[in-house]
Image (tube, rainbow, N blue to C red; front, side):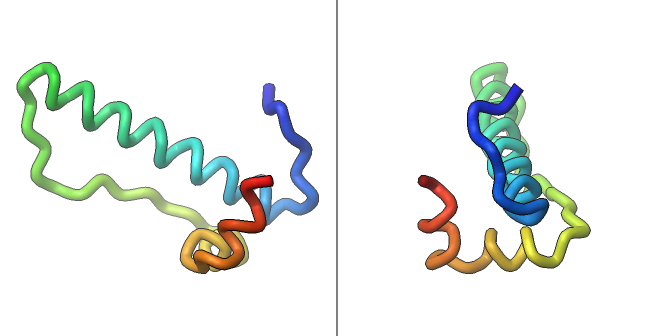
Length: 66
């Protein structure tokens, strides 16, 4: 259950992407602690153009962290 209410579907997609990125980072650090070196970049796919635009625009990202 999320503790915030998104104002749009693009915002909820962006929040989901941010949460997924955090979890991917955690998995990578766990693998490093276990001695598994991951040289390849981890990929995340998103089919929502608005959410992708928000993620790539630092000005908009700042607005969505309220």
